[in-house]
Length: 544
Image (cartoon, rainbow, N blue to C red; front, side, top):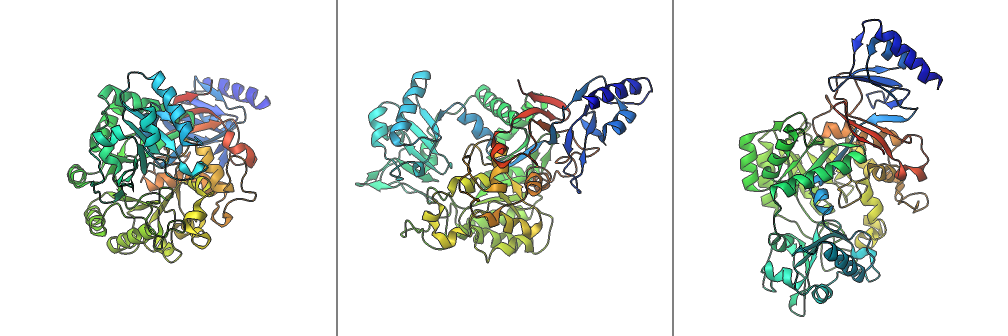
């Protein structure tokens, strides 16, 4: 309270002295600047959407005055948080679909779908996302029969939690023209008694997905705005969307220019020859809130659906090693084209075979130390022999800590205990370049960056399991984790000179939290709430 009255008095004196005028001043805060020395401050002033001064309250009020003054009440203030790898548009889509997260059986999925259908009687297609057979008692992929019985007249398309498999009914198979004779590269259509089971893995998913009705321009706008609202409520001011079409990026650009979409986005262009030709001709495209300079490549699938490409067979399915989604020659063709451009390559790699292949391809075209900042997205299972390639060629690991705490219950079954140790080795990856970027992969995982923080530091789930943490040799410190969610993520986007830390001249993206990430007990980290979120000095969220 003493600081509060002091600041008011100082503001009064400043108003009479002709000092610099700021848009607003924040004081009585615990500010983590996340600058090069990880310095702290207690006050800042914002002018024209940028940080004008950062320091102690006396210094700030002696140099700046403002009509608007915010008393942070001692709360912790940080740079706006990044999610370096997520699916922003996918989140908005999921908000309008049946939520199947944490269902415990195929029967529970059907019950949720019936409630969804009752609430949306006009929907022809029943679309949902979030089921995971690893959470079920049987732990086996479901089949179409239970969906056929419950929904004989509606096509049903249900995306697995990781986005790398779909569960559909016979109506959807029919509309997608999928039969026992259908072949697809980089995917799988499992058969039972000579007929498709209703499970589509990786590239096979698109056969049914393309039959889904496409959203209208107004629906796309609403999808994006809903996703923005959720992200701001969690303190996310910058999101990397891992895979968008150029056409959707143009819509985003238009909404941002109109001031309707205010979040900063780093969309990775979905790889295809058509998209490569289009974007290389257009070139890197950067505005105040949009940064288009990368391609998203998929090397393999996911561990949960056994689509991750492994060096050795799956421990629980020795007949398979998973698969690549494109041939090595196709992957190299794309990497060669990107290498001859100003664009960044960001490749999805889960299995140790996929990681080795792409690391070696990167190395071939990067040719030693560089500042291309090419990224391996997920870098989930990396053989110890391949880890040094990250450092030797300045390749950035872009990882999602909550994948470790989601997969830890069954990862050993897929990989075997010895190979499991090569998984989620975030510290070893970080040590190669002294940088690592963090994301959630939402809606594969929860949106909350505080889950990311807790998982990276303590390697535990929401209940504190396992005691002592999961493979703690892969854990990082609180400071390192915060950097991975701010300044290092900005570096991964080529944005570290204007975003990612609270420093004079940088854009005033910042958040104020109810509790301090750096000091709160581990058990409280996942429940931390955002008090206020600012983008370019504009308040875009406030806790009600």
